[in-house]
Image (cartoon, rainbow, N blue to C red):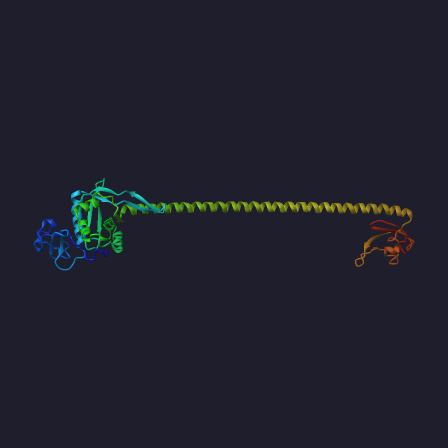
Length: 372
């Protein structure tokens, strides 16, 4: 807080009996017989009670960094003890399922069993240790850290979390900002500081306020809720992973079944195609055999007919492999009339062979002597 480098004026001093004395309860000047409330300082105080400035205590020599916050903590302890109650901040936790902040309990005023000043946060001013009794009768303690000039360091916050100490901070800097905005750029620094030390102001914040300047540093219930939400998130994630694995396994099973069905169908198709091919081959063979049988019958019939007509030989017709011209295979004239043209079959005449008697698609019939 750059506005208050020396801690500022204070409203209370510590008397010879160790009790806090309000500025209006003591004599002016050093006759107040008071010292700085901060035991680490302990300097002699002078009671400033002039007609122009607000009445306050000032250090006789030098300044004190923690004087204002020490007085605020000490007065706060008295205010809370007398009220027998204190306002607690809204409690939230990080819901891992919703990935958002959720409220466990609103800011509320709670009865307290006791309150005392302790030194736990490692700061120059004391903290409040507040004890509350729950419905079961169990006592639960809360550390209350009040900040104005000096904020609560991250190191101190981490130490509280590590120790598992339920603690919340009362950050008066928000209210300080509002006061400055209300008074404008010519705000009264000293008056604001003294006002923050007033019991009425502290009561309005600590025992009657709405908790707007309070925030939890650590709360076991919030941590438990976060852990539970994380466990539930992990459980749901595990269920989701298991569900996806079941779906993958089902897809793999169906794929395997389909592959097996496809394989069997392919085998059936192949078997059917093989059966059809075999049947077609058999039918073709039967047709070929039938055709040969018919040819043989026709040749035999024609041979008998030609035999009656005087034909002595039947020569099969073939194609020359090189010229692709027909020739009479096994001509009885032994080469003298092998070609169809020579034997007369090609021109359907007997111009070249006197023994030609006729022909069909496959045979040439002639009357040449068998032993020519």
